Structure formats: C-alpha cells, structure tokens
Image (cartoon, rainbow, N blue to C red; front, side):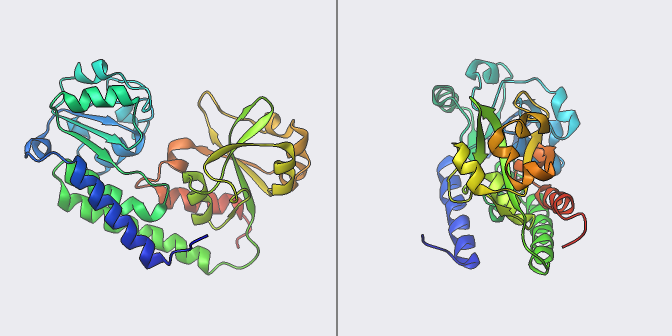
Length: 292
C-alpha cells in the first residue's frame, strides 16, 4: 500500500479541493450575495453557522442538527434522499451541498434549474477540514471569515495531534459499530470518518484492514479483539450496550468482557467539521480516563 507523507497528503488534499470547486462554483457573483441558502449536509450547515451566516439559511436537511437553531428551519429531507421539489419550493438563490448528496436525479434537476449549486468535497480525513471550511466560505462570499476559522481549526487539530503524539502507553483498539443487521456488526474500516476520528483521538481502529463500512463475520469480530466498542448516540440506528454484547462474538472480545462501551453524538463525532478537535479531545478523555 502506498503511504503518503503528511506534506504530500496536504498538497493532494488542497489540489483536490481546488479542482472540485473550480468545476462546481458558480461563475456569477449571485451566490456570494445569496440571502436564501438551502444547506444540504449537517457539516455544511454547521460551518455556515460557525461563520456567522446562519440567518441566510432558509432550509436544511435532516442531518443538520447543530446548532439547535438550525433544526427550526424548513426541512428538505435526508441528505441522500432530498426532494428537488422541496428544495425549489424554498425559492433559494444558492444551494450548497456535501458531495454525495442525492439521489442523483434530484441533484441533476437542481443543477439544471439554473440556480447556483455548489458541491463541497467531503473526504474522510481530518486534515481536509480547514479546506472544507474555506470552500464553504468561498461559496457564500465570506472568504476572510472562513480563513480565520480554518486557521483556528488547524491550530486545534494540531494541539490534539501533539497531545496524542506525546502520550505514553499502548493504544486502545476501538471498534466503531454503525448498526446491527441480521446479527452482524456494521463496522467502520479505513477511509471512513470514524476511522479518522479514532486515530485523531489517539486510538487504533480495530478493523483498519477493511475499507468503509462493512458487515463483519463473527470470526472477524473475534479476530479484531477490540478493547472498546464505540457507537453513535440517538437516532433510529442507535445501538445499546445490551444489544451489542448480546452477540456472542462481541461478548468474547476484551470490550465485551470489560463492558467497555462508549457513545457520542453522531454529527459531533463523525461530521468532520469545526468541532472535530473538540470531539477527538472528548473521545480521548473517555478512552483514557486515567491519562495516557
């Protein structure tokens, strides 16, 4: 497997953002003056509010749960199942969405409408967060505010990275379980936001040999031997400790024997937004309450 040095990763990430935005940003100034923004994606909405521009948002998707005032906005559906008619009914002058928003037919209708439509790249890497903030700031015409926020986030990320680098002791192996389906754990491997946050928090992903979200066999769970099971709190797919450790395979792991089970808010933990460093710091404290 090809391994890139941090500088090389940063260069590639920046180039990726620049290429994507050059293809998706409107060429007119209307988007920068937009007063009716539809925000699709919880992290995008959080960033707009963090830039002090929440008053310009007229509608959001169901994943836009932070800050609290965003939940009072009209809702246009789940980020991957939006209704084009619902979006257009809000008479927006800018639509801004996380890459991966869908379905494709709905997105195509929105793009064909002639309204400014901006797609923000969302790679599952903590190093990409500052550039994502800059991209949102560019889209809504608040470049200076976005640069200041991006630099602040960069400093916060570096602080937790330095803390983890200076820590002593063995890293705990964490299994992020998205859900249970047919008695199998849907786990987060590498190339996932859960993997990025587990590593930022100073732990090891117990199933880093798989990519993305994959259901695990009992043998794979036992072989992973996680020290801790981590899940999202709330939501329809919320997994409880009782449900998790009722599975013989999980019960047989170090996490199962020690009933080591942690929950965190999904958007806070997995959003890879302005609060990512805080989330990693909180996760680190829960994983290593005795210090590391």
